[in-house]
Length: 110
Image 1: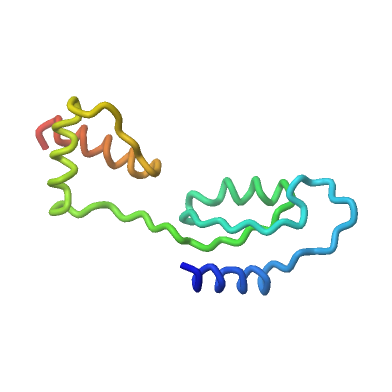
Image 2 (image 1 turned 180 degrees about the vertical axis):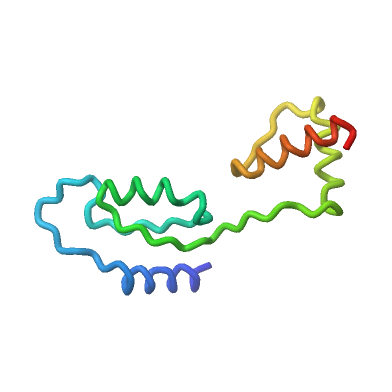
């Protein structure tokens, strides 16, 4: 992780040097922001960062890959036993979408 972070910082310095700003009027003026989301999801955030004066650098550290049919058995088991759980935590909206889609599919008998 440290070597990846060091590489990232080197790229940030080379690609988006900080401008010399006197009295910045935008809240993020002169700040560099690393955006690690997949490009399709990063666009709205990147636009908002630019509007706030930031210099975003897109560096995709997250890849969204659907599970293959043979990998779904464990997920199906969890979905079928869902009433036994007190809470479910998802780490991304993609996980929520996949969980709900799979739940609908197996509840319909497909």
